[in-house]
Image 1 (cartoon, rainbow, N blue to C red):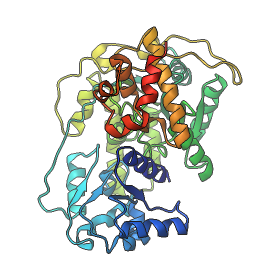
Image 2 (image 1 turned 135 degrees about the vertical axis):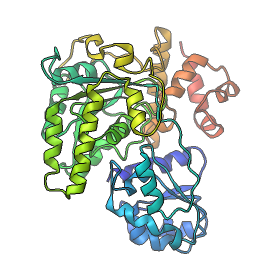
Image 3 (image 1 turned 30 degrees about the vertical axis):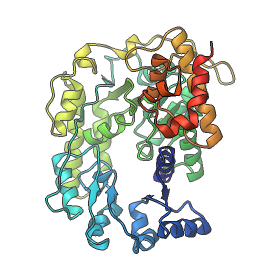
Length: 442
């Protein structure tokens, strides 16, 4: 399960900032599991990660006697049948408060419509909960939509390849509707010398794990996947998300593009859509419960209307989630009247086994140039080297945004480095000297 990898990443991230965390899941050998449970009972950990399925089984009994003070339910939209990623096991979280002594429950999600919010509150047996809603508007995501067909001078496959080739060395995800199109698109990109791997639910579990680990550790640039890939991804330096086919709902779309630019750095979100995508999705639900089938039908058609109308993309997207904003002005194709495919240069490509495409570094607004770019790439290489030595994803050491800030600030001392966002005392003690040395290199 991708959630197993996510738990490990989040425990590693907690350890990076000095919190004592662990996880319990099916990946552990019995002896290691017993050791962790003993540690929990002895107070060795402050934070435990587990899946809803785990709480139904042995994890629930393991924590039954602990002095729990808070239960946080992440991806809480999975509790709701109206959410984009409903998981039946999540419904069984309803008894958490009663089961663990009426302790506080915190529900967290980035994609909650008002209907989903009401359902979460009911399912978790919350009584007049305090509700916090941040803005759904993410201006660093540059959203573009293209209708497939005669209007497109390039075919979809060639347009996707052009966008990906121009971003070699950057992390990205290409979503496809079917397993067959995942495999053909991945093979096409690989044939152009691009470090691309396929991912879908029909692959062996070991192969899916290998692909996900390669992406987490920056050993491959792009994953071509069905929507089976994503929930276990908390990778901060994904620079683009491309939808070869239209997603099935606006909530799902928001969730999927939300995997890009989590470090705040500018990232591209490009969707190709058609009425044929609508027809394909509706066939998926022919045998479903009539009420749910009609709900899915409305969601798919709303997704198509969003893509097909000439309205600020961000304005339309957040309106669906219950928020009103002015037109973004700078972060979508409608407001900027831009064509990201046409503006992307056609780069010479190389067959496998030869030199890959040269690339420029990602940046918040404009890429570093000259010496700044060389420094950024040097810091990026150092981050990868340190991460590989520790067996963790590179972004857990410093995000791309932090590396770019280090290039801009060019700190001369450890005290100066502490002033850079993303550098705390523990990370300074662990990595500060190495990065300061890299910054001083000519």
